[in-house]
Image (cartoon, rainbow, N blue to C red):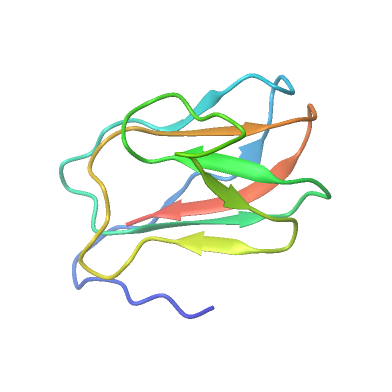
Length: 99
């Protein structure tokens, strides 16, 4: 997936893995300068993110990212609030970027 980056925006690597299965963790804190972000699920199970500043849960209103899929913020629609992530299994890997 191609991502349009804003001129002058720095790309920050947020990649990692679920540290404790079934427990939400911070992906990234609030950032009023954020222009966009994306998360790729590199694991075999679903991941869920919450970009409303709330704790991610494995259900709505969090966003489900199936195995092998990418979630990307809409152009001009990236949240500036904290983003959290949850997966069922410890060690589930993800690749993530913020700009």
